[in-house]
Image (cartoon, rainbow, N blue to C red; front, side, top):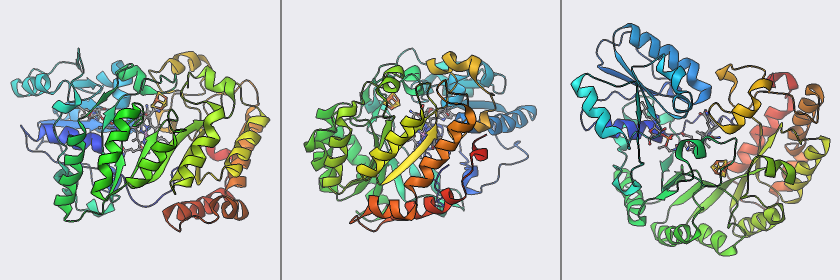
Length: 422
Ligand code: B12
Ligand code: SF4
């Protein structure tokens, strides 16, 4: 469940693909989420390139099959085709494993020569400094582009060495952590300020874990502060107990951090290899950010084998005692290609990719029967989004979109039933 702001986030992945392809080809940029129409007839295209996560794989394959049946070359990329290479190859001329930047010289040469290989996988990842700056004029091609959120996606680092077993990042990129020179990140921010003719823009960092190298992160923040922007990012908990990070983040314009707390159960954190999360730091992290006026979008996952009725209570107590601004609850979802998927395969209820959105019930946790588990899962959400609970968690906080998100969640959770997760 995503709170529907009726805005769609700009797809940095496709912007990167279009930026590189545009150096050689004419590019039509189509984003179906905006209401753009996918053509029935692909005859005007030499190559049809599609991106897909697991939850849109079925749709991406249907389009790919149609384009292939019309004799077009089909290129598939993104996290799902990467993690399910054999499956994706059945629907495409070529599949790119991981980032396009690292294979583009070879891939573009083969496309032009008409001899595309089934799989493109780089032997070595390119340094981020060698990557082209994304060309955002592509997102303006759609007549529906006004539906894009005004948060501009930007990337400073790639990869995350934490190594959680349910996450695709360590599987695709290993323990690799790369970052761009700070000047390049600042340049990109200034490019958007020039392009849009104003300084006060809002950026969303797409990094897997932007704070992993605290020295780099602090330096980035100390420079960003001079650009008078606002920003938000996904962040893991290591180093966030350091008050200097919260201070610099607030100074540089951070208004929201999305943090994967995942679980309040130490056994669960250990079982998924989430070494970055130390329960004893949770409250300090929250206090530091709140003291600087930074809102927290807290992610909590349920459905692990160690989960019990008590896990729900612990999470509820943590959220209420720490005034978590925007709690998000998801169901544990083993994504194809991850170690967790292999471990859970025999217990999965289905492999219907449309339901791999973290809001569907995938397997029965050992500690709770399905009925009981889903009742608790619904109840904890209803409780934290009750009017009184919102008032308590949000007391004294700035009136902004986070309040609005809470009110939308209040409406949504009132009619929430366990059956929607089946
Ligand atoms: C930032 C982020 C978000 C943001 C913004 C998403 C957006 N606008 O794209 C928000 C918070 C909104 C979000 C939401 C969700 N996310 Co998210 N997210 C990410 C994250 C951390 C980075 C994505 C990103 O933009 N990276 C930067 C771009 C440049 O890199 P990229 O996407 O990998 O693209 C490169 C390559 O894949 C390749 N490529 C991509 N497409 C194509 C296409 C072609 C043709 C070619 C050749 C190459 C190619 O080249 C690209 C450029 O280098 C990823 C982790 C990750 N590293 O993928 C998770 C990730 C994509 N998210 C994930 C999930 C589960 C979700 C949610 C379901 C979470 C939730 N409970 O709500 C929702 C789903 C939203 C949706 N409807 O799609 C999973 C998906 C797993 C899967 N197998 O599908 C990931 C992989 C994290 C994980 N758990 O492993 N997410
Ligand atoms: S901390 Fe986040 S990005 Fe890093 S491996 Fe774990 S889930 Fe993936």
